[in-house]
Image 1 (tube, rainbow, N blue to C red):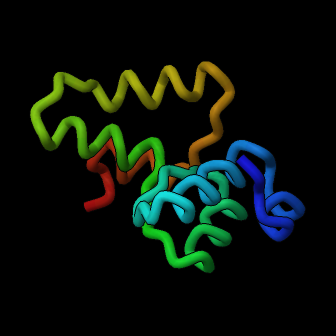
Image 2 (image 1 turned 60 degrees about the horizontal axis):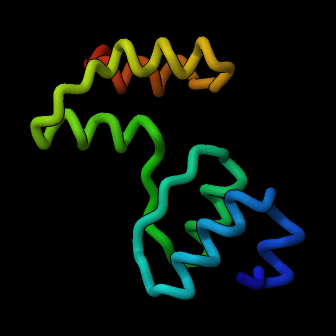
Image 3 (image 1 turned 180 degrees about the vertical axis):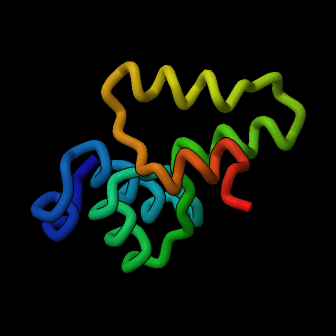
Length: 94
């Protein structure tokens, strides 16, 4: 797949590919966690979710997901999550 020059010069290949594929296939929703990628996706007219959003949706629809364990595994593998995102994921934002 050929990336637009804008996407190729602005984002890493993974994020650029996600956005370009969504645009090519006329998909409205993408999963991107990085802030620059999220900004570019919004500017491209796309709706966003992230890894935490997917976990919460899976739990909401009945999949046996432990969000707390998933968050811990993500952190163990070097995936940075902000404290507000973690609090939201664990339902501690109320």
